[in-house]
Every structure is written in C-alpha cells, then in structure tokens.
Length: 152
Image (cartoon, rainbow, N blue to C red):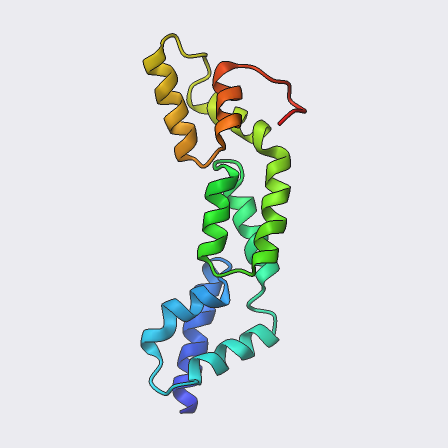
C-alpha cells in the first residue's frame, strides 16, 4: 500500500513539475493508476496540505498563459474544465472582462492588422475572433474599428 501511495505521489509531482494542475485534473490523470480505493485521494490530500496543489496558482497560471491569446469565454471554459471552484472562476472572469477589448484588439492586430475590405473578409475576421472566445460586442467593435480603449 505504501509503495502505491508513493507511486501516485511521484506521478502527481511529475505532472505538477511541468505546470500547475488542479486537484480534479490530477484525479482524472492518475485515477487509472490507483490500485486501492482511497489511496489517490490520500496522496492528493497530502500534496494539497503541502501546498503543491493550489487553486489560486492554477487560475493565475491559466490567466498568464492564455489571456494574451484568448477571450474571456474561452478562458472561462478552460477554468471550469479544470474543476476549479465557481467563485475562483467568477473572480477570474471579472478580471478578464475589464481588459477584453484591449486584449481583443491586440489579437486582431497581430493576426490581421487592417480593416476588412469586404463582407467575406469581415466574416472571416469575426469568426476567428469568436473562435478565440471573444464576445460578440467586443468582436464587432474591434473588427469595425470603433470604440475607445477605455470602453467595453
């Protein structure tokens, strides 16, 4: 039993060494290695008690890695898929909404840089931005070139 627990702990630490993982993610990834019921939960409890698993760091990591490329909706979906607490997700989304227009403009500028010349090009740009998870109002403002930096 002790060796299995160590094995699960070692596997969890290996995953955590590459990036922050939520408890739910670790459970999903390590469940197939659990031979005795309860050993995985015990190993994850130990790691959480030692602050190796930290929800706040997971949220910060996702925001740091993804906010420059993706819109609020897409990042919210990623955070929810990680099994994070709804309060943590809501707080992160509120922070992201404050900068959504600015971030959308930067993504659009890097990809396109010029206003669409016709309806086909406009639709292409709007689909790209929607695929990145930006809101409809934000996409419209960015693609049409309207709105000021402080608005949204």
